Each structure stands twice: as C-alpha cells, then as structure tokens.
Length: 470
Image 1 (tube, rainbow, N blue to C red):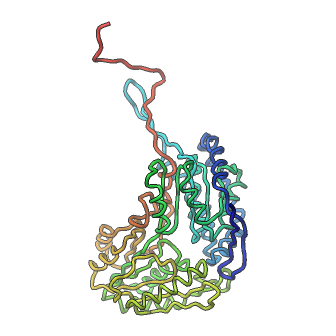
Image 2: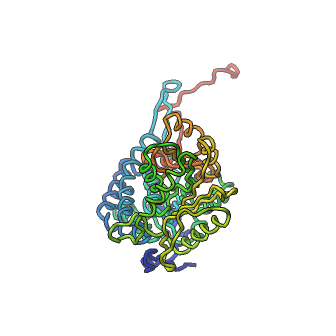
C-alpha cells in the first residue's frame, strides 16, 4: 500500500515536493541484483564513479544549495557549505578507505603468505536526518559504495526532495540505478528496511529514541552491521579567560548555528562562579543581535527557522516547562508568526532546576548552569546519558588535559565550538549518542569487514606425528 507524501518549505509553508512511499521488497530485490556486479568492479573504477558524482554535485551546486535551503529553512550561505561538504566527502572517503581498510601481505609458514583483505557487507540501508539531509547520509553512502556495497537510502520524510536530488546526482554520474536507490516513506518504511532479512547493514543518523528502537529490533541479529549516530545533550564548560567576546561568540556558534538543529549543538552552558556575571551578559547581548529570517533574505540571516511547526510548538512548550520547574529566563523564546516555525534564540538559567531533564531539545535553546569550581563543572558536564560533544572555554593546558581525561564524549574541544568537528577525523559518541561505530573518517570501518587468508600457490602439507608405519 502506497502513501502520498508532501514536503513543504518551513519558511513559507509552500509545497515543494509531492510523491508516494516506496515498495521495500521491490527496492531490495533490485539492490540484490546489482550487488554482485558492483562488488566485482575494481576499486579504482568505483573511485572513478565517486569522483564523477562529486563533479555532478559541483555542476548543480547552486541549484542543490537552493533546494536544501528551501526544504530545511536554513540560510542559503549554510546550505552552500553543506553542498561543499558533500563534494569534499569523496576525497576524504577515498583516503579513509586506503588507510582504514587497506590490504596487507605477510610471510607465512612453508614460504606461503598471510593476507588481509576487506569485503563489502552487501545491501546497506542508510536512514538520513532532516538537519543535514545531503551531507550526513552522503557520509554513509560514499564510503559504502567505495567499499563495494549497494545502498538503499531513505531520506527523512521531512526532506524527501533533497534526498531525491542527491540520489539523482549519483545516477547522472553513471552509477547504476540498482546500486544507489532512494526510497521514500515514513516510520513504517524505515522499520521494514531495518527488519528485512536481505538487508546486511543499517547506517542511521537521527534521534536517540529511533536509534534505540533500531538497536533493540536488531539485538537478535548479530550478523547485521549497525552504526548509530544519535545526537547529544552537549555541555560547554566556561572557565576563566580574558577573551570574553571571543568566548561569547564561540558559545553562540555552538548553541545557535543551524537554529540549534545540530547533534553537536551546545545544550548546556556550565559556568564557574567567577565568570558567570561576565560571560552570560555577553552571550545574551550577542544572541540578541542574531538575524532570524527566511533562507534568501537580505541581509543574510544567521539562523533560519526550525524544521516545522510541530517542532516549534514542542520547543516553546519545553521552554515554558523548564521555567515552571525553576528555570529563570535570560532570553525568552519568541515566535513571530504562529503559522511558521521561526523561533528566536532562547537562554534560560537552569541552575535551580534540581532534576534537570536529560533530553536533547533540538533547537535554539541554551540552558545555563552555575557551578562553584572546575571539578563541579566536570561532574555537571558528565551528568547526562549522552556523550557526543563537549567543549572547554578558557583555562590552561593542564585544565584541558584534565577535562579531556574526565569528560565522556567522542568529540572533546578546547576554545572551539562543540559543533566544530573535522571530516578527516572520526565522528561519534558514547552512551545514548552512538554505539561505538563513529562516522566521518572512520565510516570505512563499518562499510567493509576484514578477511584473513593463509595462501600458497600449491598445496604443501605433511603429518609429522600420530601415523602408523606404512
């Protein structure tokens, strides 16, 4: 049974895309038919296809950026950086495959050789998010294809047009259509993909709730590779520094870039007593100057809207709920039009909330927590089941060494934003943030599995003991 799907521009409410949900069984059948031939393509040939894909994205770059901006509501300048990340992912993935999954040959007994090679898993289901609807799924797709897998990509039902455009770029690069397929649908299509016995791997980026559901569903299927990236309740810890303006800019960038819709966004600003009255007014002053507007506005906005009205309603309600539990507003969350999901940056002093909810509020809402000293700051920073990203602002090298050793996170920065992560490094977290299969440079690790071999051109063997005389 097919379901009609509609995507609208969050900034205007206008329809941008209309289509129907896909058939999971038919899509998987096409993938299985294409799998063997693609895996047999020489590595150099698969790399050539990926470079063609990068050129196709480059050729359509401005059109692609405009589509991303329209369907997500993010500013055009930010959508352009996402397109550049899609292009850059190809060369990074080629290097990563060579470094992480290379071949080795060693001397073995009887003048033979011992070899290490890698094989693809087969059919990989890639489930993408809406906040970076091209860059993040592409970070799974390209490494998977280089390794010899075929891919079934289900974009978020909130950004189907971007997912379709990304897939079309692969096909225009002459990647066979059965090798990369886009299937649309809601939760039920994602569940069918995850559970299907002919899918060999699930690569997911999204909420902790959905990731936990996937993990639970596949707990009895250890043969299926599963990589989960599930966001965070990320802390940014503020120690003494004379660079107040720079610190404020780093905090604002951490909390409010992409309207706070980044898995690495700072959700909690933890400030030692000596800095509280210096940094909080500076952050508020800068946040009040941020332009929030539609993607193509002039002057260019810093923030666009959140993804839809339901998300805006939830964030507004969450802000009020935190106030009712003892939070003190520093900057109120405002909504200029109840029909559109534009929210102003919001800051709330959560120090007096004794049982702060450990949830990822995916939007422009920053909670500030005052602590007496550095040790208390680290305890508070680790007071979460998540563990994706954390930053220390200020302090000395010895402080950062202490912070790095004590904090539970997969990305640990110093005097840099929580959302500053390099594609040339692993990207992932611990706890509810991931399952120890980091993406970015380390995506190559979950896209192929190692195979050990002992080899000789002719059989040579003898039994030295335990034989009767012949």
